[in-house]
Length: 488
Ligand code: NAD
Image (cartoon, rainbow, N blue to C red; front, side, top):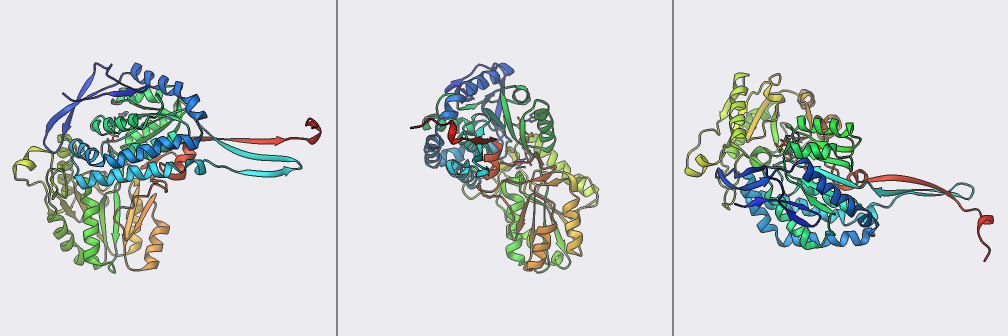
């Protein structure tokens, strides 16, 4: 059986006796096993990273990025097989898998600019003959803990910046989808990074706790659900670590009556149902304002019911499966709960037929109208292909609803009015905002923002925030009096 192993100190290792089965969610078939690393194995990886740090840190940034250039080429060359691995273990479509890999590669490209991005500030003559400047130095060993839904992309929000800045690194992928990082680390090995600079540690909670407690790990990047993000944030702080913890989401989109109906409903449908709704930037709540309700609902039902659902490797499929049987049961039951709270089921994706849909963890696009904004489901991250619709009369009330949720990851508006768009951009309490855009996913050179219960910390992943996160600043004030210099 295929086994997802650890990569420590430049070697593939299989110490752990604890294993977990890995399942293809689109077929409900076991595809392999993953090791669950003990505290001792995590320690082994940290020691390897710690030993590699002094010489990696002293390697000029211009040389460090040569490994990233090689990795970028290898990722490009292997995108097909990487995408297949993502689809098989994660259930999304092959086009979605390629899409996330492209976003991963963008981060490698941006991190290749580190020689310039790490440059700092210099003030001459802060007092007579005295200069002051700031240096950015790496922290040491850092680690990321990542979720199941983007196994190829999310580690790259952090990894390329961490090592480009001179840190050494540990990646702990989700135990549900360990095989993508296996392949990525084979490419990391081929790119020739020195031993110990990049390490892969597989596992679940026990491995995470060992990472959080380890005194030599200086910084933690986390992406996952909000309860775990909060735990990671407080535990990391307890152990004196720098931390950025991205949590869950429940993203609303407002449709004003002046929006273009056909274009808007197609974009929203893609935003709700992409990756079967298992995206932290998926639209979950659609807020129609005034007469847009009458215009939009039929069009949204139409776009949603036309989605082809099936096994992600089949080229014509537009929406794949959920990640586990448990997740499927949870999403199905949240639909019932929303109806019990007053919602009207206008499209039920729980009625399935056909051998594939009956074998994996599927759900077709679902729409619930008249969702109760005071109900529990409005505040719950469903993480499945379910669109909830709330209809109100004014943009002011729509923005109030956007700001009343517990999460603050993203929100969008569809309108042809510049002043409505500006009002929304100004008042929405979310870290990412879309205007006539369904998924406001920041490019690699912008921070992946997120507010309220969607983020714990201050510096986000990607771009300049990542450079600040992975470096510590040292301020130097210096004076070189002429009379202290030897005469030539
Ligand atoms: P999760 O929180 O269950 O797991 C994330 C990681 O934490 C995994 O590596 C897992 O091994 C570890 N983990 C799980 N439970 C733990 C515990 N009790 N103690 C310590 N570690 C633990 O998340 P998931 O189900 O893999 O991913 C889906 C979630 O991630 C959703 O809530 C989604 O919104 C969120 N997400 C957020 C973003 C963002 O940018 N904000 C991006 C992607 C996903």
